[in-house]
Image (cartoon, rainbow, N blue to C red; front, side, top):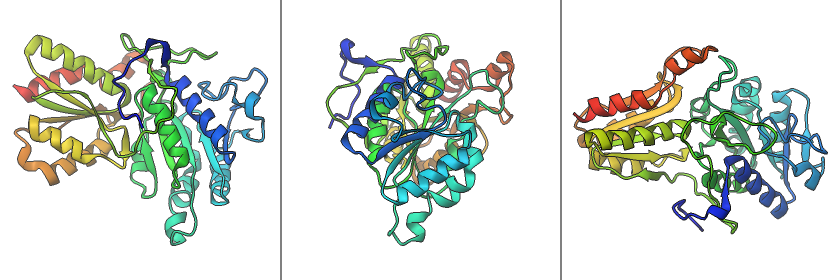
Length: 352
């Protein structure tokens, strides 16, 4: 198995959209129990393949028995997935926006993650739910990052891939898992080359090397994206890229060296890698796009305080979105979100 994204090959650079689609296609070819279900996921010929074109062309290849278009009912989609998974199939469901998960909370909280426990292990629910997250000038009901809600529910595995290499390996691992898996994907990191074009954050290359050969990404294994000695930063998805940019700038301007950790999965969480880094740097910042209060960053901070308090030379800091609904105004949205400048200031305050 390939465990690193360090290898490069310009002839095989894919976007998250392309890599996720490739991973799903491989799993559908490998296992005829795998099927796709959601709103506008097929609509062939010439359909859009879901709201961000992840499934583009798969209905033409596998047919509508395995790429199932549904009415606009998230509750029905997840209910069908739970039943199908319990009967031995392996569904992949899509929410057009992660915000719509709240329309199916009974199925997502009381059904999918609890059936294995309630049956003493006799029932399995091998289903995958994909959901775009993150703010993108869509206001309070289409811009949330609700991963923490599901981290709080025992039974779910939670993945937050930040690049195409991880996206493909994660979807393949998730499909093969006998437990329900939530994959949250940041919509501004898709880099779609399909019919749906999205604005791209400045300066970020949304493609990376994705090998053609078989590989899986293990759950519960964080990746050190940048090595450093002065401050540890734990960040996910788009905020990870802001952290990388801030780290490069502050090392150039102030000589402060940051180590940046991408958890890759939040459940299970690789706290060992985080603690090892903190034991070296003695300072830590946790950054994510979810709101500050009660986010998953608070849990990471608590774990560090419980298991690594003696390593710390300064308080644990968090850089997150403000505790308000996401504004529709682009100016106000930018004010609410974590960003490179906020990270730069927090790193400097912490390290000096």
